[in-house]
Image (cartoon, rainbow over all chains, first blue to last red; front, side):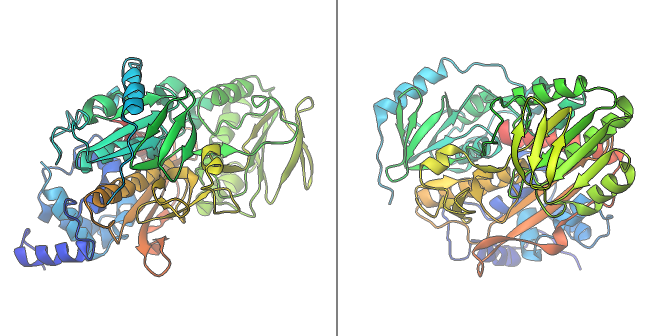
Length: 101
Length: 439
């Protein structure tokens, strides 16, 4: 099953799930979640460090994360890390990182 | 919303005087590839806001403090941020055990605050915070100046409990804050006789960097194997078992270094005798040629003095992990090793706690509530030999039932063994982490 991001309907669902009751006015959805990537991939995914994430599409990032979480890319640190997030959270992370240029 | 109490002249005076004196060198050149900051929601990020909507004083120049200052500027809408750090340079504790084996220099672990100031418009003040008023959110500095803000972020790290008989702190160095302590321990190791005995003590948890003492023991054992093959390393653990990464450290201690490391658990140090280099413990006296004594720890005295150390038997600060607000003082947020949470006390996760705090403050200043479901992660590498490392990883999700961060079991674990690739990854991780914090 594949997702073509961004697809408005689930984008809205993700937004609703993340912001919840907080209704933050100026905190983009997924920003805080995605910042868990920055320690190793650089602020906003722009490096220095491991694989640069900024510039990749949300779709690619999401699918990579899902494969890692499923253990399809070995049992490395990143596979473990990906297992820490729900599917909704992975989508939010991918959407935010996919919007970084 | 927020009651503003600015002491404008005082803050401006101190910040102004600091600007002229903080041009110290920095070791963060390797990290600076991300270019100038882009315009934030309140205008250019690289200069302090002309019309601040809120003011924050960050106390502490380590991993948690700098990350919170940077992200408050990146994410906050016109937030004026003043960072109070004890010195113009920070020396990283991470990787500092490699100084003991001669593999790194202390200067290679130094980081400055120029990027925070020039790229993110953080005001930097190099002074020591001696007192805070948690109610009015004022910070008194050693120079006598008083700063005021809407919120205070405290990230002052840890202090060590005094050890009876240890009047000279360099006689049995902890080397658990990088700097002169590290240099002293490195020198003592270099002077250790060929059949010498080194002793490393591990404090009762919670302490800074759970795998750190075991990683250091492994590194020193590997160094001794080469340079002091007749030597011995006695590890006295105040805990009943390995505090972290038991599989890897157990294999290293009992197999790889079986002839070098002698591991004793549940050992509590009562007092020491510096002249005879002896530790007196609840299970007898232990003598060593070199003694790396890592004492038990508590939040920095500033936290305790301010009445915020209300958890862990009065040692650390209880916080609401949605915003890191102190449970004793809602305008003061405590992040990093000084706070009492279910998360480890370590630099990588301190960086993420700082982001959660910065995000929460940016929402609070906008009249909203903190993110109700924050996530944090911890990742690190441990040197098992002088050229091979293991990794350790955890993700924490907020639990509404526990009102605490809870480790996700599937995402918490270590590498199966150690190798040279992980050692290389460690160096890359360090560069990335320091850049996300300081650059």
